[in-house]
Image (cartoon, rainbow, N blue to C red):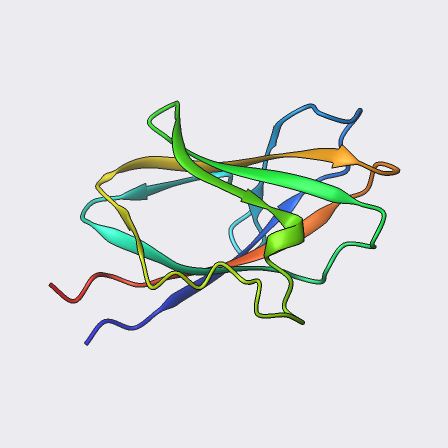
Length: 121
C-alpha cells in the first residue's frame, strides 16, 4: 500500500492581480519537483482559507507546459465539502511546478496543501 506524501506550497504576495508566479514547497524552499514514476494528486486544500475577499487560481505545470489541472481557492476550503478530494488525478513522470495568481482582493500571500499518493495499480 502506498503512503501519502503531503506538501504545503506558498504563493508569495504578488506584485499585481492576475500575474502568475511559482509556488514554493515550504519544506524544501524549491518550486519544481521531479517525478521518476507515476503518482497521483489525492486532495488539495487551502491552508488557511484566504479571507472572503481574496480569490486565487492554481495551475499544475509539467515540463514547462500547463496541464488541465486548474484549481480555484473558492473550491478547496477545509471547512466545507468543496475540497478537491477526487480520488486521484494521475501524474506521469516529469518535472512539475505549481503556479498561481491572485484574481481578486488586496494582494496577499496564500498557501495550499497537496496530498500525493502513488497509484495502487
